[in-house]
Image 1 (spheres, one colour):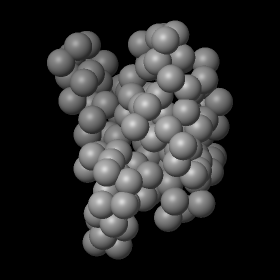
Image 2: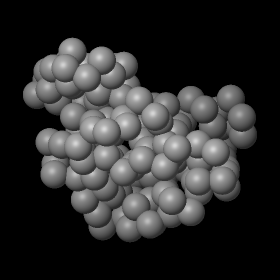
Image 3: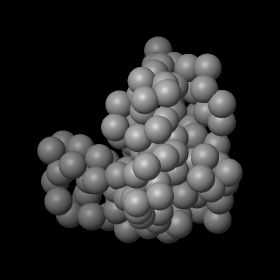
Image 4: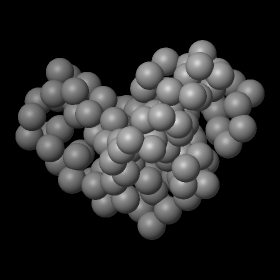
Length: 124
């Protein structure tokens, strides 16, 4: 199972230098978990940069994976991760979601460097 961090989605969608790194987990819909926070962050970004219609099309594609709601259990796990690792709120939610489902978190965010269960490709 895979969780792609919001920055990874944006990189993939924009065809950035690390897009190929995220292609496999994004396109393997059967193994793709999509935290609701990813939907929020990617949709907000796309609304600002490409408009509502294109943003909604991307949301439909993201929903082809399994959408994972932020519930009370994940919220508490994310808070504990945040305290233990000093990760920000969104990063903690992404990692807590991946860990709760035995998934790998794919990211280009250096804040995850050295954390278990994370595949990191730094931004060039």
